[in-house]
Image (cartoon, rainbow, N blue to C red; front, side, top):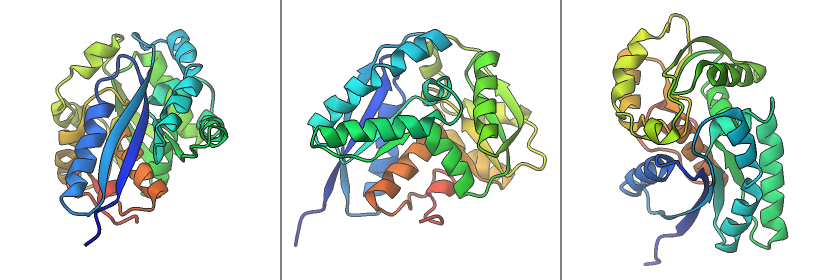
Length: 253
């Protein structure tokens, strides 16, 4: 009997991020209980302490170095795990970033597909057929508006949003991952096709997603779920990981 294939999951993360290196492994460990594939996890960090437009732009410049470092490890897929850093660089920037970072891995003889959390979120919403959404973010209101503008530029209307206005990225990561269950009760969800329970890779939400979806009977996703979904798609693997919302139900394989 041959050993199960093991895949190396690479992530480019902000230096103060503590969530994507827990939520993505949690999803993929849960997947290991259902499927034969196994995963290891590898990260490279970009300096960022406060979620401001200037720090985000400075951090994004460091993503090239991180992609090269991860391609040295010959990762099988590479995730750029900062949604708002990409969105702050201009409308549609995720396409440019993914292309550039992938080419760097090719040039380094370690070609790996690249998934950005920004691209994954909007593409995940398109995958489930969402035309109207409501979102929850930890950001200050101007950055939330930047996210809204980015999503709407991709053809998806943002009906309502809640901004928790937490500027310290470490503090964002300390939030209760089940808090979105109650916070999203304040969102206007009338007529929406989906809820984004965390439009931020640092705000924990994983245990909230299925309870919110069960309550509202509409798809609920987060940046980490969307990123994981497209990592699995790029690897050609099943996206059936029950318990984390519709996108990872296997329905969209």
